[in-house]
Image 1: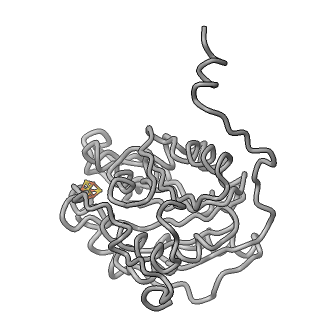
Image 2 (image 1 turned 90 degrees about the horizontal axis):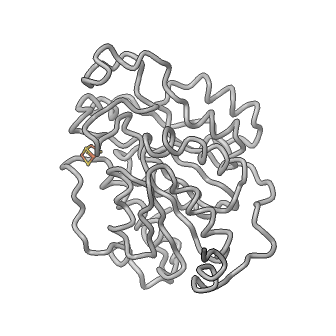
Length: 278
Ligand code: SF4
């Protein structure tokens, strides 16, 4: 994948809203914003046909910084909103963005069932192993011995959540990991995820220099995945379980029927108000 799609007049900058991000300097989320806009430009998707849904957290600010339709929802409910939107508007390209706290703790249940449902959407989780917006508490992906938070002075003490393995066990049909220090690789994964028919999950390792300055090391620790994606869930499970969480690339891709309600119901909000009037 090189540059923009030559038939599109839209460049990555046209998918940015012009609102200046309030992320801290060096936050990995800048790179995700850039990768999203590059992927949309590469695919030449009309802005009015794309919706970006999020929950709460630093990374969930992403919709405000894009020039596509957006919805900044409540904590952990981005996938529920996105599923409702996709059911009503199957013609839209639906992207969902969030962080590890929002997506795997408060929204953990929605994550499992969105994987299982296999609706056609892309979910990118900016994983920094911490709650950034609420000042640095341990999140589901924090290592058990991380003892920098006053709330967990001896570390969380429990094994961290393994998002890619959970996604596989729950039925996701596209499972990948990217790194914000490799923006081209992340853009390529996003392009493939958006093109994939079904629920595509990308775990983006996205450093939080403010609360996890040690993430600088990630640049030295990440490595590309050499073997290529498999469509065999048994092979994928073995690879994901054996992995230390620092391998990037597309691990698993399978094509199974996408779930989409056959009879999408559309109605006016005034009709809904009438139905639920007490
Ligand atoms: Fe990014 Fe961390 Fe700052 Fe939040 S607190 S904007 S995740 S660097």
